[in-house]
Amino acid sequence: MVVDRAIRHYRKGGLPRLLSKMRDQAVFSAEHALFALERAALTDRQWFEYTVWRNRRGVDAAADPRQLRYVNPAEILYTSPFETLFCFRKFGAVRGGDWDRDCELLAERFDYIWDALDARYAEGRDWEDVPLVQQVLAGERRWRFATGEEVWDWVERLDEVYDSIQRDGYRSARELHGISFEEAASEEFDSLADRFRPVANESMLLGDTDDVTIFDWIADIQVDIGRDGEILQHNGRHRLWMAQHLGLDEIPVCVIVRHEEWQALRDEIANATSVDELSDRARRHLDHPDMVDVAGGLRTAESPRAAPNLTATRADD
Image: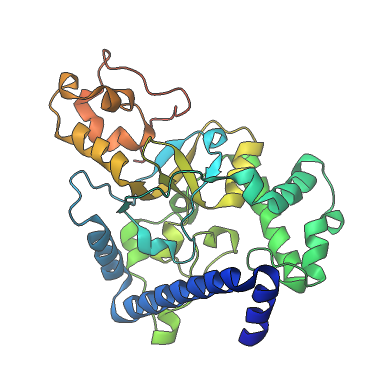
């Protein structure tokens, strides 16, 4: 099977494509091994504390990755280049480089998903008539976790989530589960194999769980923040589309990765004692949703407003 996949990649794009896929597989395998080791050696609470410590070393105004930001979903137009697999290992990370440049439009990267959701919820078509469903049934595509007949369970769950958001508004994962972080972090497992059960930040789309874990508690839409404060989708694309389609003014999101230049602005604001000490660039971002935990008393009536494309300012309680 591995050889067959390698041959297909080579036929599609020659040696460059094959080497690229081999690098991707190597990264995936390393992430999988590290995550397995962490999950095997640590309790959920220990894992969370270790992950946050590892990612926030050397960061002055480090944010608590459990704190939600409230943003306007209509203004999230681009997707982050970071791999979504094992995204929890990136909690609180600060990364330099050009990863926030030339990001793909969500509507282009996930065009086949956008088309399917449009057909169902905008046009009102039955799932049987949606091309993507037919492709999955024919074995031509995989839709998230679904292959073949599994697609019916998947789209049924999508309908449940859409109906819930339309009826009750958008609620965070912790609201839906109704327990505290401490309760979620105290989950006990009977065996090592049970500890390393699959987790994904879209667990709230996968149906009810018997026992809520940390990974269920923090299963919100996840975003990254570029150097200029642009909010980029990291994970949770189905729920983001629904929020945009329903015209919601704000949704809770969890920040995974921040650009080091953006983090420098957070540090500057956190270390200032008055607005007058801030650079013009820092002042322009005082009302950014990701500054709510560092602006504090600096957010005065005289301070300038943030750019109009980033409007929500409410922090999670």
